[in-house]
Length: 162
Image (cartoon, helix red, strand yellow):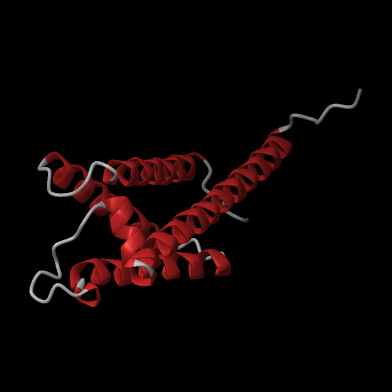
């Protein structure tokens, strides 16, 4: 059975190959997270814009249209929907381009942290329905995915080319 020689030069080459393989795995996970979170945000952001009735049937009645009572005047729900959709489109664009920028990661993480906090805080205060805790769990899972990307980045930074 042939073995790989373990001279210092070959050990350096082996380390470089492992480093690039680890970097590729992190890059793939980064892109996968962009796709997953981008699609989730796109769907959940568009939903109240397309069908406020089904959105309220699942998440509970909203009061942001009390001034007129008209369904079209759910301004706060629609504002949140537009912003979540915009974040989703941005993340999907990054995934499509395989752009693993720090800015995309910061946007993804900060959006999930903010939404999870709002979900938990306002469910605890009984302002929004407990179904929002499902969203909080999904947001926390996404944050966990980004934490894994960060930790793997520490272990697999690409080796310097000499």
